[in-house]
Length: 369
Image 1 (spheres, rainbow, N blue to C red):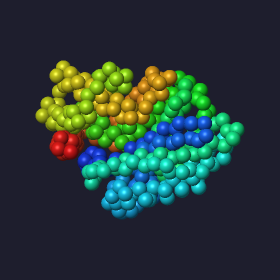
Image 2: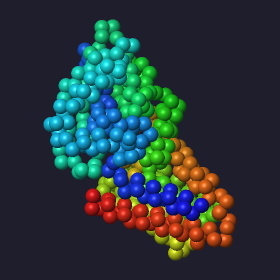
Image 3: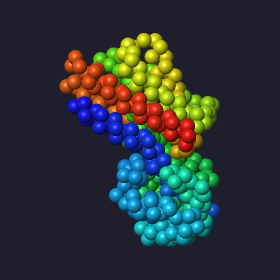
Image 4: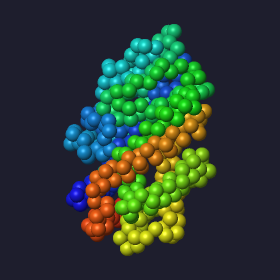
């Protein structure tokens, strides 16, 4: 069973060291000007042009067509720009944008492809697309293509705008062109629960490592609950403060500190296996840092202004469900071993060492990267 734990930790370590390849949701802002819809889409164009299946994928290096993706990544911005109309034409043909209930023809009117992106970093391009509004049409909907990963859909320039988080092959409801389609409190809460879950499993590799470090501290339920409860309380506080814009800290500071928290927890599992006030206090402090990390992700999603609190609560519930999934899976895998006399020596200590080394690698990478 030890080899299972170490293999799992190693896979997490590999993923943690490959954050540059992680798959981020695309963002689409939609604005109506009376005659047409203007769609401003920020996305990894190379991944979609290469035909990568981004649904459920957390690392482009693990995709089936990663070779095609790397070839497209090697193109300079001008060369990539010549390929973008092909992507928009495919969307037009497949009916990504429906005005009324009819597929709208799409035209690429502008694009911005960043220069000087690091070789291993995702290059996120911005496409500006025009879709004509047919006479008499009062609504539109977006059918995000299968395999395109997640999409954050945001209506702009209207009162009570519609916002949504769509998965690949998911279609939005009909959205009124002139606004008024903002979701209610319950719908917003429910919609943001999966966003929080996905941020932990599979994309929150740093948070997974930290929670596993808490789990490996002791095979007894009480210490696990005490640690996880404090961690949850702390990151809930800073998640709310960060999302509200009350507390801000640069990602260049937060991300290395999160990596350092992983190292500390794992090392303490090895050298000081007692649950004291100092460890609990540090867990609370580390939870504050992780909450700021959650808030930065949530800020990129763009919480609906009219239902900010329900959406924030839904995201936090999703985060907690993701954490519980990690702990439950670890407990299920290790249940036969938890009360063996050699559990700490043969399982908890080696696995914690792997987590500490991963955190150390990640810390260096985040400081110099």
